[in-house]
Image 1: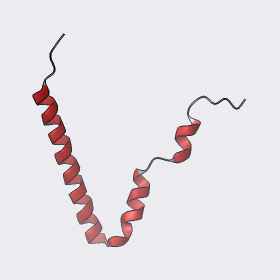
Image 2: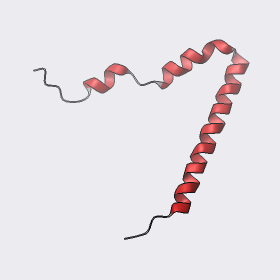
Image 3: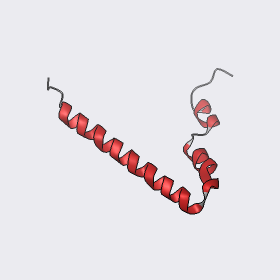
Image 4: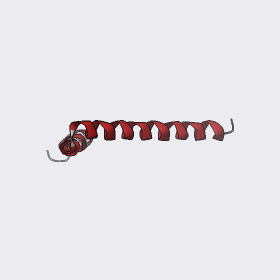
Length: 62
């Protein structure tokens, strides 16, 4: 069995952190340029729909 490459895993985590940070900065700059009223719209678009996940599985209501 191959040994885990911890250096690769660490690098991937660092890249993910960097990407997330840059995305946050872009969103912050976008909000600042468009005004402060758009925060609720962005939060709603990122949240999954509550009804979709419950209906996808098999149900016992026959």
